[in-house]
Length: 348
Image (cartoon, rainbow, N blue to C red; front, top):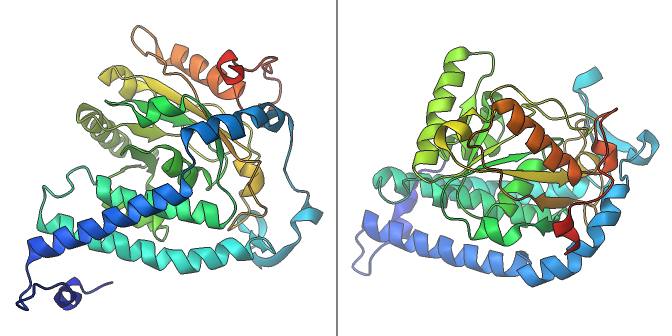
């Protein structure tokens, strides 16, 4: 843990005295400059997204990038049986990147949290705090050759004003940094409470006041519902995985009941997001990506779905249809109808 008071003397006025407000201002400026420089370097322009990526999406949906056990060729094995985790030769790159960038991210969160605790008005929605995670996600994905391509309603989510509920299929830990990269405005994850124990990720979720839920605890579910409605009323979008857990084989699983109740109660639109091939790049039994995701990982943003006048079951059907329409064929559940034609907006 960083001793903020001890290092506070590094930021002083010319007269040699320390000022908490001056410290906060200087650190805010530094973080702002860092975020601008990182965004301009890492984030592709909307024009490049449309011209470079959309034309390849149809091919991506028909391909499989899942590696065989022989192709994985693990170098390191941790644990036994179903809990075994592996690292192969490619995984050494993200391992090194994580060791180099993780402490910086941790330090950034610590500094922003200290400033926020000194002044509650500094970052009321923890937007700046969460932005440290967005910067880390972009740096990490780019450095590990796992930056996704994008298609669909890209401009609408970046220009969106007002709350909504984002929902995506969930097949890999990689989904989290990818969504943090794609969803530029502040939003709050609805996540399992056990993620609070994961290094860096746990601090980001807890310090950012994201919604942590224990699905086996009725009180936790009710608390999560109230927190979700509160964020939506403040104009902050939510991000949920309706399956409630990661799919081990990448195939879309059944949705948990009542997942759309917050959107129905708050009368906010639901925006489905299809994630492709994350399970192939970072499968459930790996600690890090096992291959490059460049040209393989893809994100499609669908048009919003209005929940007004619709039941939870009707919304479930609409969201599933949307997600599957832009998911690879190998990620469709066995026996489910396969979309024969991609949605028209992708071809426009």
